[in-house]
Amino acid sequence: MWAVGVHLDLAIAFFTCLPLLLWFLICREKFYRTKLHRVLFRLVFLGFWFVQIFLIFSEYYFFDEFKSRFNTVAVDYLLYPHEVFTNIWETYPVLIIVFTCLGGALGMVYLNEKIAREMWIIPVGRQMTFKMLGAAMLVTFVLGISISFKEHNVSNERIVSELANNGTVSFVSAAYTRNLDYQAFYRTLPREEAFQRTRRLLAQEGAEFSAHPDTTQRKISGSREKPKLNVVVFLEESLGSEFWGSLGRKEESLTPYLDRLATNQSILFENIYATGNRTVRGFEGVLASFPPLPGDSVVKRDRSEGLETIAQILKRDGYSTTFLYGGRGLFDSMRTFAVNNGYERFIEQKDFPNPTFTTAWGVCNEDLYNRTLVELRQSAKSGKPFFATILSVSNHKPYTYPAGRIAEDPNRKWRDYAVKYTDWALGQFFEKVRTEPFYENTIFVVVADHGARVYGSESIPIHSYEIPFMILGPAVVKKPERISTLGCQLDVTPTILDLLGRPYESLLFGRSLFKPAAERHTLINHNREIGMFRDSHMVVLGLNKKVEYYHGDPKKGDLQRMEKPEPEDLELEKDATAMFEVADELYMQRRYRLPGVPPSN
Image (cartoon, rainbow, N blue to C red; front, side):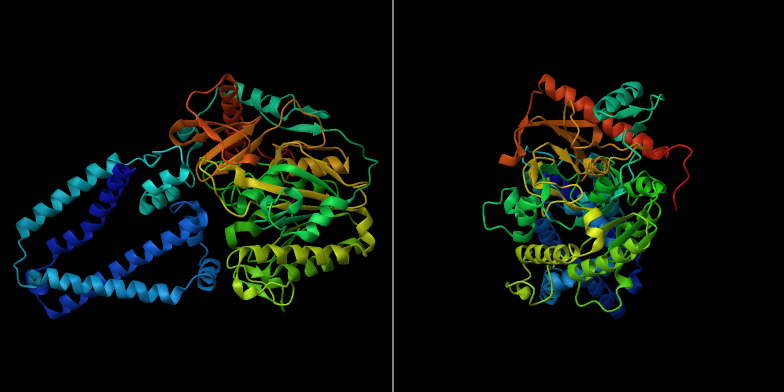
């Protein structure tokens, strides 16, 4: 670990020195000795050390939150300064950190003046400077070409490998691979085999595949006589299973109201996993039933108009479609993705003229749910069946919420309290909505966009990806039920559509959790690793065609890495390779949509 860390740190250190040496080379002797140059040099030197010390603080807090060096989250956050800087200001002691960095930078300037006080009177040897610059460039080049974005993987413990990494290298790696060439970096199968395997994995009772072998398109049987029940999906920010008493939390439950609903009035799926650890992963998984490709989520990519989503499917069946989001639709391209993929209306933060409370990320959950109730009433009056998706923001750092809603002090800004507030706000919504006329013919779904935090030693820490998936509504829940079938967010849309019981045609990568299947799996993503879990086996596919194998039960903790794969592992590797390869091809060729059907918007 130390050797790798020193190698990466040295490369960045030499690279950082190049501008200084270049300046010494081009700076004229006469100007070098002027008072103006001395002042400018010290100011630049002060700024440099301020930034370096600030990055140390930034990386410390980032690692504390994500258990990772700078990754794709850091890259994405730079694109949305409004939400991110507000979040940072409300969460961390920014002024103390800034003054500490300034003090440290001033100290470095003072130390430099003491150690190198004669630098202003020693003649600047142009020939010597040129040699020093050449030597530094040579060393930097040698170190640079010897760097591998994956060389920090020195241990089976993910966090140990992260510690061996360098923050700058990690950030550059994340930025460089945002739109990577899947075929060049990841394992593949012969195209025909990849599609055959994928179709076999997606086969299910009542599904008839297209005659064309290179598609996942299939017709799902159903009855046109079935009523068009309304559908409302709550996509809940960071509401992992670890908070729910009904899903096994050993400490006091943080979701008492949702636990009562889960126990007494719902169909609760108790073995469901998120496809990633970002909201955009939950977006594509729940709404588009699409695998979490490495690189950016399809929510943020440039070939994502007209994709197959639950909104597209229901809109083709005569539904009105609405998306409600507490934050700004600009963030993570959420509005663009929604309106280009089946949603007729997108309601966001600017559409809440007088919110009672706002967080760094948008309006609080109760404002969002109250507006949802208003929108559902209006949709019901139109006479058309409606589909609505609600994405919350309150359960997110800095964990702020209105006072007086729960017993706990909101000034503590603690995650557990934000979860309790989310539970309270959802409870208030369900208390109100049950008195509405449309309640009896509406399906309500509560599902998390991802778990609360990432922890675990595996390359993909699947244990921390477990999430709730709960279905409510008297139209479909005749008695409470718990279902232990293994699934992931890709299965949410097919399961909802199965409950509706109406026929449809689609290309979804998930399957109904109500229908029998020969095997069940989850598809998952973490940073640039992708994988599949099935029957206590997990395979992880990484950059440069790397593959890892794990065994164990994620409900009991970390999985154990296996050095020698078993036959089941090798078969799982081929299945995972096939699914992601096919998904990448369909997306890149703009074929994750029904042929001949124009985009609904």
